[in-house]
Image (tube, rainbow, N blue to C red; front, side, top):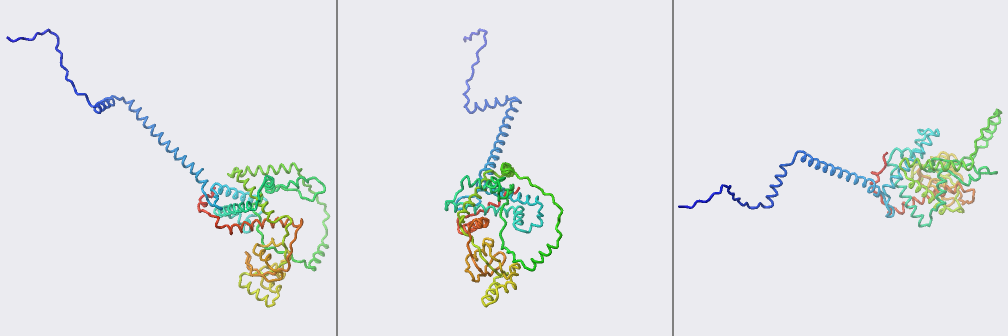
Length: 446
């Protein structure tokens, strides 16, 4: 008989089957799947918002970076680019822009001043220097080229001044500022002092930007005695006007008032240029250049230097062939005076037999002046070409003069000497100058 197992009535234990542990990867996948399947809608929206915010921040960051790069390029890289070099030293875009703005606004101020004084600009539009000023204000490229060339000439002049040990100190700089605004401290100190021979100084708020070009002068002809007598007789026949006229007394400014006007004019001038984007540094550089030119001019032509005066006659014709024919006729014995009356296109001197009279040679155009300086007295010289045509000239006499009575002519001679030095330096140092076409892209157009 088989043996039965004994039961106690308690439940039986079930044997659990051992399962092999899942690999790490599978477990992670299961856990990740389980977690994601249990994310609520709010949690999913919150996570999406985080990604959107991160994307917006990234886009804004990129935009800020691009703006920063553009700003750096416009404010740091472009202004430091070079538009020209002089002896290896660059002229930057920043310097060029500043000089352009300075010159354009100086020209505009000058034209406005002339127009406000009652001058009909349409009438003077074809005359120099007004036509050039108007063209440069209206044609940016023309003004830009002139400004760039002026900057190059100034750099060459600075190098020459340094080689000659010519420099500018504080007194010379202050004097340049005073001269620019028409302020004469010596004349101001003499206001109210008796006797005085010096005229009262005037304040010019906007100085002329460039001197009027010189041209061949037309000396005044010797008065006709008969015409003079007729004029005197006519004046005697006129009944004098005995009606008393009221005397208008112009108030005289005190020295302090004149100084205050000068200080105010300089302050207003600087304020105006500050508004149009021209820095004080650029204005100060202008005054320093003026001072340097003054110092250099005095070194070129000292106070005791003599000035050349000459008695000259000339015949002016349209072309070189006619000038050579005139020289041949004169060498064959033709009268200079008769030939000048017959063929000279300079009607003023031609009517006087070609006589220009005795004058300071600095009054003539450069080509004519150099021909006089180099000519022997009495010799025929020519053809000499100038902007007016072809000259045949003869120097009657030459003489150097000095003294205080030549001060005004000496100032003119100094200006000419500086300009001649600039021209010669540009010609001699041409290989030291390099201009880059990018200057056209950096002319301020507004």
